[in-house]
Length: 117
Image 1: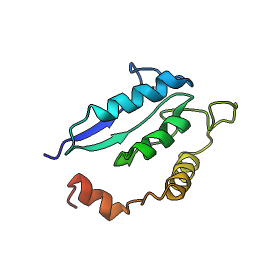
Image 2: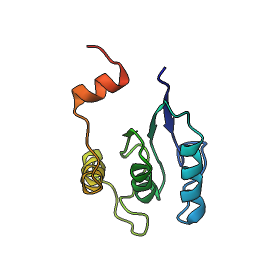
Image 3: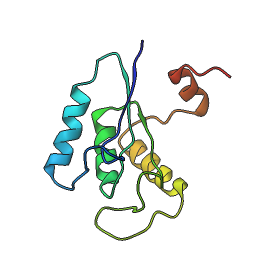
Image 4: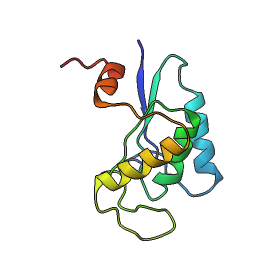
């Protein structure tokens, strides 16, 4: 303990991330099934990654992974191609800060994950 759990809707061979209430409800249900003492994260793939990642932030997940490996579009409703991983990271960091969430430094992330250098 603690358990480290990463939810991966929209990833390869995982549940799809549809732009309807069912995708949102699926993520809420996944989060509520997790043990209370777990460190919970998410890596949401597919075209609907942005709204579901914002929802995950609002649900209080502990870590988020974003990037071109998981999606090729910046927005679910437009065909803007995600050019660089840094673009997705900047977008989520900005939204997280606007929601009052703190962003861990690399040292803080290593401490949370129990990684020793």
